[in-house]
Image 1 (tube, rainbow, N blue to C red):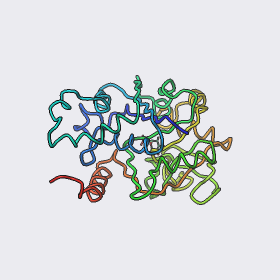
Image 2 (image 1 turned 135 degrees about the vertical axis):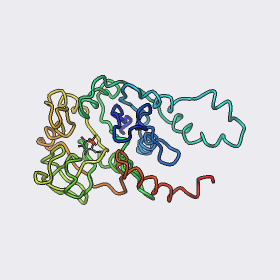
Image 3 (image 1 turned 180 degrees about the horizontal axis):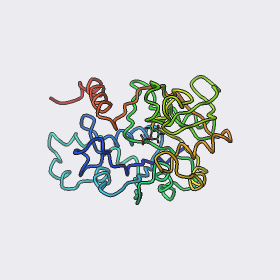
Image 4 (image 1 turned 180 degrees about the vertical axis):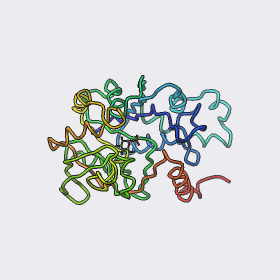
Length: 278
Ligand code: G1P
């Protein structure tokens, strides 16, 4: 059973300036719920009860969100508004949160390595909260992946097919099909130009990693953009047959872009409108 889920959440969210000037991008809401809470709920559904968040300067609102707000609780106790806090209270009851800061922005691989002490020597999940996933009536993407982990016991990246002209926004994988929707990865490239992309299978922000990854990241040299890339570390493991890619079931929204954010808002509004109050 995988208990821990890591949330790299130190990035600046420049594409959402000025909204993200004083507010973490992970706190941007889709309807009334911040992006990171969707991620935490997905992790809980997958069986995780320890959330390890790698934050940075200016991210305190995340810690406050997953805490009791006594003043607010006191104000609305016994009123018709109390139910607004039911969902977040249940999240807080079901898991514990631990935090560490990534002092310098040296890439996603470096962010994950910064979380090593919060994870320890166990397999763990990683969620990039700006990739918002939903599987309308079925198991969440992370649940699908933890189930697969029980079978393969190796690193797993979630992938989806993209338009090849967008290959320079993603880690791209190539591999051999080993069962329906599952590939044994033999190549991975971080954000290649379309002409250099080995396939159109892009990694999205869901990973399951074995603790061996920490030593591998330590050995990984800066890659694309001068940053320590998780894609490069995973390539080293893939060469030993230790990485699989999973074509998940469900929908994924790139909420790191304004277009994806608006699309997600419309999708969740349509899904939840009967539960929202006028
Ligand atoms: C990161 C990873 C990339 C992956 C993407 C998924 O990039 O480096 O391999 O495809 O997340 O969202 P970022 O979007 O942080 O630039």
